[in-house]
Image (cartoon, rainbow, N blue to C red; front, side, top):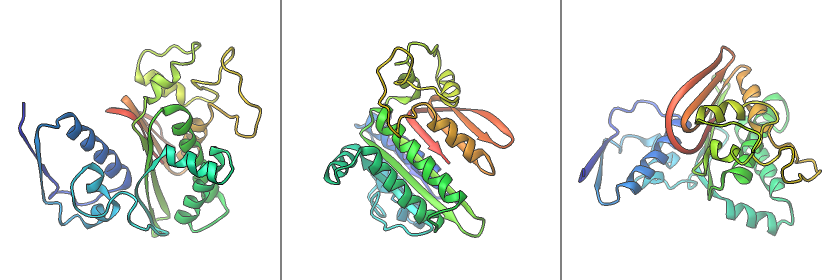
Length: 262
């Protein structure tokens, strides 16, 4: 057994929200699975942006701000952990459906990042946020939603990442007996098709007839919106998919849960 691990951050030149959030989560999981080992870090004190975004404290290094501590502004949303229990309590306190709470939070984040409350970019971002947040709430069995974002005004680009440490897409879709899922790649390919869901299927539990009953279209619509001039990445289990205007590329990964970059 390895008794000591050294994490060297001195060579990092540039960091983006998705890389920071995913790496922090993997480091945290690795530390928990090696609880008897000693971890030390080097070269991290020069990483001011990552420290401000909450990267280091997200995996347990006592440096910089805690996740969600930085106030955020029109250019960034720090690494943030939203407990689903907190979201449910907020919905109860405001006498609204949990999905209305998600809608309101999504619109607020979209306004923050685009500096608009209408228009194509705002509508795309708020819709994507809402659908991915809903997927975590309704399908992941996770305890929290992790997210972060950055807006680069000089290039008119926004990167948004959302992550959960739940059951993953394959296990979620296996609840649908009409789907043949043998691998995580099978699950991702199916999840990116319209109308595919692990909870809404013929002969399954009766779905409520309400404005929110659109199970199976969230990832499909979000990926199609993002590929037009941008990109979409989803990782779950040991597989991943990257989608751009040029087409779809398969990725190799190992991640217990689901991570999405818009």
